[in-house]
Every structure is written in structure tokens, then in C-alpha cells.
Length: 307
Image 1 (tube, rainbow, N blue to C red):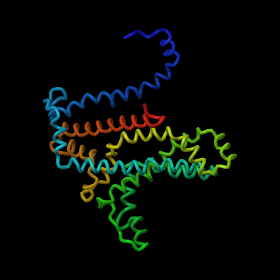
Image 2 (image 1 turned 180 degrees about the horizontal axis):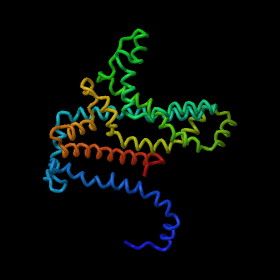
Image 3 (image 1 turned 90 degrees about the horizontal axis):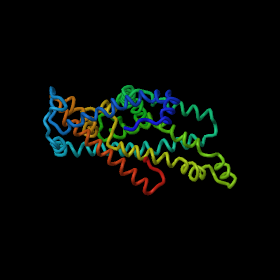
Image 4 (image 1 turned 180 degrees about the vertical axis):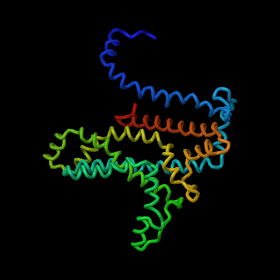
């Protein structure tokens, strides 16, 4: 390794506070993101409680083959992909629409009130959020079912319905996250020059025309980057929320890869650490392939990409 030049040492001494500020997240990232990758090798081993990572017996791709041949494989893949694509189709455009609507609002006080109200659900913990969902959708005393009954409809046990599980999961996420996710788009909209809008108004452009021809192209790079990042999470579903909403009656639709890894890798007796790690590694490999592929497509057909 080459020693640092005097110029680099000078920069280091001059900006030592910035490097010191950067040090804690760097250490955290190494300890909790990179160092645990050493344990990924147990996906290719027959690891049992009492073994160490390094002395467990190598079995190659046997754990992956076991998962691919499992009778639940296609059900897990289908449930994971359906819920995630449903979530992407709803949660990606709604924050954009919401941000554009807020940006078009002329009254600042009204805009701030709406922002405060829509941001607040994001700070509710997942456990409390699921408790609220269960109370709202309760078939006997829930507000939603009371409204349905008042309008002459039949009460529905939403949490016990496998058919409705994905909709409950996705739309409750819309309520919790849309306001927060719109912040980055509002920031991008604020960077668009007002001179463009003024020139368009002089030319007789309506508000809708300005949104289509000025605002949307202005936030297009941000939209593309976030779309690529979201596509890289297609096989990932938040474990905590879906696990808390899961029950024996909706298990047919709610059993996804992340909850299956928990049940087989930790909850099972004895726990199958190697098998669970192999499934999670397979899941991560698909996400990596998706994010690289989508980024390559965006770079080929557009001007913006993640790298």
C-alpha cells in the first residue's frame, strides 16, 4: 500500500472532523453488513447447533436443491412476487401523485397541515400499526365493517381471508408510507426553476400542462433511481408486519419467503440454520440480479441510472 502523500495528509488533518463523523457509520457497516457475510458459507454446509461455521461439513448445493424441490416452493414464490408487485404498482406512483398535488397547492397553511397529517403514520411502530389495522377491520366492532353494515353490506372478516390479505397489507402500507415517501419528490420539485413555470404561464399553459411538461420531466431522474431501487427489493417483504398479520386462516396467501425462513430456520425444532440461510441467499441473489438488470435497461433506454 502506497503511503499517503503530503497533500492527502493535509486534507485529512484539515477535515478530520468530517472523517471522525464518518467513522461510526463506517464501523457499523463493516460489523453488521460485511462481517456477517462470512456466515453465508453455512448455506453450503450441514451446520448444526454445536458446530462452528468453519468445521461444519460441506454439502454443496444440497440445501438449495432441497428448497427448489420442496412442495411449498412455488407457493412461496407466487405469494412473495404477487404481494411485492402489487405493492410496487401501488406504492410507487401514489407518492409521486401526492407530491405533485401538494406542490400545486397554493395555500401554504393547508399544505403544511396535510403534510403533518400524512407524515405521522410513518412514525407509528409496526406492532402498533398492525394492532390498529386489526381493530379497524374487526368483523364485529371494527369501524370499516360498521360502515359496510350501515350501507347495507355484509360484514367481512378481512384478517381471516386469504383472498383479501394482499390488499389489506398493501393499502395499509399506503396509509402509513405515502406521505413520507413523497418527501423526496417534493424536494426534487422544489429544485425546478420557477422561471420555467413563469415562461409556460406566459405562453398560456394550464396547470396540468405545466405538471406534465415541466414537473414530471424535472423529477424523472429521481423517479428512475427510486424505481430501480424498488425493483431490487421485489423479493423482499418486511418480515415483521406480514408475520404479525399472519394467521392460520390466511396462511395460504401470507406465507412468503421471509416468514418461511423464520419458521424453518429458527422456529423449527431442531432449527435448520443452513437450510434457512440457503433460502435467504437465494432470495438475495434474485434481488441482485433484478437491480442489475433494471439498472442496465434504464441506462440503455434512458438518461438516468443508479450507476
